Picture 1 (cartoon, rainbow, N blue to C red):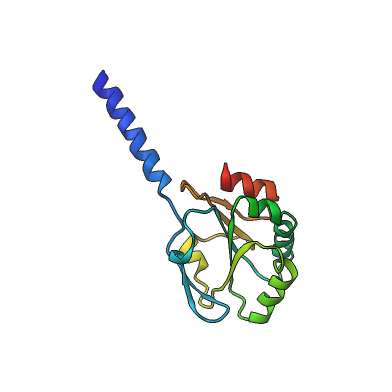
Picture 2: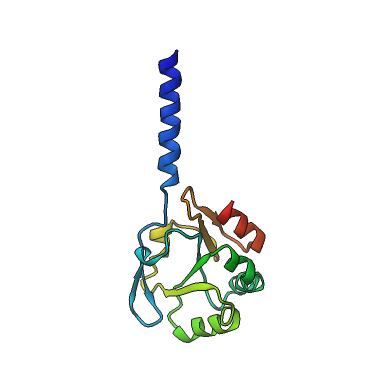
Length: 159
């Protein structure tokens, strides 16, 4: 009986420790300057939100505005943001940044996905807006395919 309990406990600990190791998948996109940017350049000790967006999408603009309005809360929790778009017009992304993120003090990175590989890295979805949340301590990422409140994002990043 003790062997069964010990084996069960060890299995539980192993599974939980392996789940805690889940991190951002390997990816490679381009910065607005055309340089390569991979997951290895992320700060792994910080909660991370990765959002696949279209700068012309109303839902994406609403989500960006929600983040902007709660910028102080996100800064307090040291959240890093990565925004990835397949839209090739760099000017559209620059306007998106100007409208929603300049002056917020948030840690954000905007990336271009010219080969449209986001889905191959993060998984296929039918959703126009894709949000992936990764806790600093690891664990299973949380996915949302629609706009979320700042509170929902923060709760899933830091709790």
